[in-house]
Length: 226
Image (cartoon, rainbow, N blue to C red; front, top):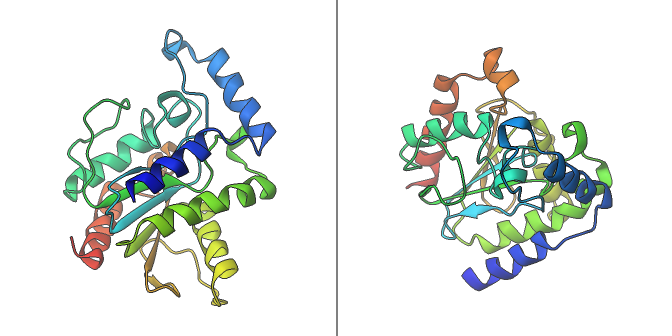
């Protein structure tokens, strides 16, 4: 399984199927923001990471412009990640309350974290074609996680595209509604739990709160039995 992930991650990192996204990632890496002006940005597609024996998968939309695109790891070095990892620490899934860089010693228990889209899109708005191009990588990640039981999607785009994958690959035509904390049975026996995205906008407007996301991850962990 480890070899499979190594091959998959190499494919993702070297992928050039979406010229618009590749260009945008490189442009961000050259310009950089003032706060990170002296850093070397990753500037390439960002793979998933975590425990290859994961029972829980957490899926976001895409790496942040100055988060994953800078650090090379999903939800690492941005405010959404800070909020997420505080919750994962509270649920005893993570050993750290934040993820700052790729060698910060972060460990996540029985969990795999990834994004539907492996590259940052301009204005956080991917094109349909770009999402379709990336769907095979998402499918391969699910296929490689043989012990996976629960999928938590962060945000409606991740939820919709996870459903799209299942409808395309299974005889699955149920109409599921995006509702924070809901629990849906997928055709392969896995449980899907949608969550509001822990973006600064959602956190600041209290669309999502620490209590809400803490309860959700405790629920996901209990269902996944770890």
